[in-house]
Length: 248
Image (cartoon, one colour):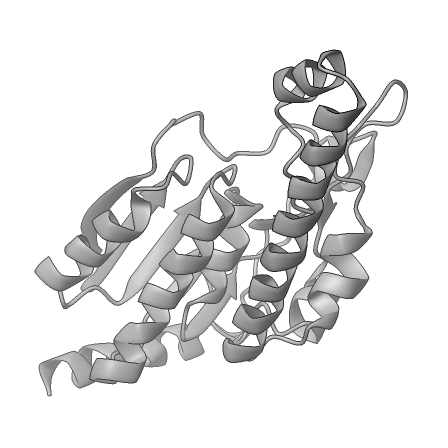
């Protein structure tokens, strides 16, 4: 009952300030990726930290840094230990793709098993990129604030250039084997991504029209591509599920 009253109060406070949405500040754009800021604010923390705080009576989990393989278990432990967490604020450059998706499933499972609504939020000035996208999409309610950045790209298994060079040096057979492994893992992950989005109520067109349209690996004068969703895109693809909720 107390939790319900607290959530109702938070919602009412949010509705009071509808119409007071601040103007998104002008920031330098990335020449290679003009929809995105030149310097994304996603932290250089190498392992995502999970810090519970209370603001204006709302229990918030600050999730900041690189998503590593151990994140899902840490997240699950924090949510069990602190069942009053109402929101998760995200700032991350991505990381382990499957760990990000599993973290999203854990967040959504709170609603399925306990009826607990958890809002995921990208606050003003913060950036959620790559694997962070899928953790964010696990929120029952999702909010990207006016100057928050939801940045997407095509996942890749070919960032390890050392492994690629080694395979090439070993000859055609080793290179063919590496290509086969990459193709297989890419197909599996693409299928997992599609299934996850559908379960979260997100249209698969977020993958086919935006994420998978970005060049994953750069070469020479053609750098990797990123895309930062506009407000219209956030709404169209249902990434921001409740654009009426304002910043805290």
